[in-house]
Structures are given as C-alpha cells and as structure tokens.
Amino acid sequence: MTYARYVALGDSQTEGLGDGDDVLGHRGWADRLAEHLAAGNPGLLYANLAVRGKVAAQIRAEQLPVALELRPDLATVMAGMNDVIRPGFDAARVAADLEHMFVALTGVGTRVVTVTFPDIGRIAPLARPLLPRVLDLNARVREAAARHGVTLVDTFPDTAVTDARLWSADRLHASPAGHARFAAAVAYALELPGSDDGWALPLPVLPAPGPLRAAAAELRWVGSFAGPWIARRVRGRSSGDGRVCKRPALAPMADQSTSGRSGTS
Image (cartoon, rainbow, N blue to C red):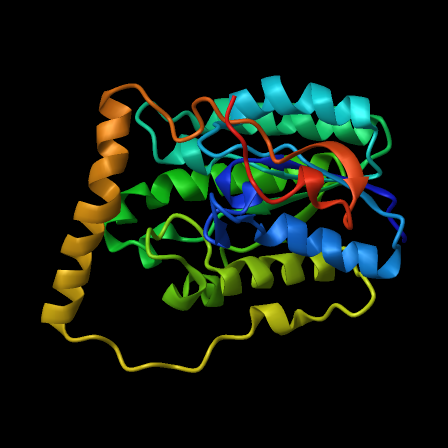
C-alpha cells in the first residue's frame, strides 16, 4: 500500500532525541520512516507531533485531536515509557489512553502502528526493578492492538534491540543506529518495498567490560543523566516544558522549514 499522509504521535523517541541535537535538529526513526515512505511516494505529506517528556495522557489530550484533523492514512503511536519511569504508574490507565488513540484513529480509516517496549533493565541495569511495569504495559498494548487491528512492532522478545550500541549515552533514547533500526522494523511491519527483517539481527559480539569498568560506567550514568532526571521530577519539571512539536502540519519531506528543530514557545 502507498501512504500519502503520515502523522507521528509520541514523546522524545518519536521526536528523535539521540539522533541529532537541539541546534541542528533531531532526525529520529519517524523522520527516517517518512523518508522510506517518500522514496516510494515523493508526494508523501508528513507531520510529527511528538514532544519530549510527554506521558500517554498528554499525548492523547494534546496530539490526538490535531492528528485527527490532519486525517492521516498512516499514524504511529509510541507512548508510555515516560509513564513507566514515573512514580504512581498505572498500567491500566496508560493502556486505556493508548487504546483510546487506537480507536479514534482506526475509526477514521487510519492504519495505525504501535510498539511494545524492550527490557529497559538490559539497557540500564539500575532500571531492572521496572521490568514488571514494562511486562504489564506490554501485555495490555498487545491486547489492545489485536482488538483494533493495529500493527504491532513487538520489540520486547528481540534482545538485539537492547544492545548498548543502539542507545545513546543517556540510555533513554536510541542512538542514530537505534533509530535507523526501529524505522526499519516499522517499515518491515508495514511490508514496505525494500524492507526486510535485517533490523532484528544482532550486532557483532563485543567483549564484556570488566567489573570495575562496568561500575564506573554506572556511576557516570547516574551523575550525568539519572541525577538530573530525578532533580527535574523533584521540581515538578519536564524536559518538554515550553516545547512545541517540530512538524505541526502535513508537509512534503523536502520541506525542511517545519522539520528538524523542536522549538520553544
């Protein structure tokens, strides 16, 4: 199938953090998927409504109405990880927000793609206690996707996606290689021309770091990334405060005026 109007909803992963920067702009897997789509249909129109730091309820309230007005024939919905890592996580509530988006979008004839989350404890060992939350949410997402005919990219069973080389230094956002892999996974799920299952192949094995090196890496991560994140939570702040999406309107991929940089309001 050829898609003409693609809208991406989500948080920082869909915005593209880890694949670029705030000065020159973020590319990310959704932009990469749009490029793949545009290769088969140069007339593709693409909007990216994602904003970093948003939880599922915010994406439903702020992005879904805009997406529906744009009447896409393809939409991707990635939401829930910001909920998983916050206190007071409620898997049923998050899944309900996701299912509401599935129902609304499929109800107007949109092909919807969503995702399960990987075992984040394999990416950031200090996050291992969050595994039950990830498992609970993933199970609910699978059920909701099946109920509404939503295409699911099920990343959890695939241990290749937790390779450290596919994640940026903060371990929260994919690296450029990780964004490229996930874009390829979505393209394969959509059976796009030129796609294949190579995205699931593991990278060449590297020697495991020694215990001292591993411990030092954990300490650096806590000081550089986990600590500042906790400080923002204590202050009631979010990385998305004051930010707007990078592509609020449907536009051709060649139009860079609405792409790249996520502005501030």
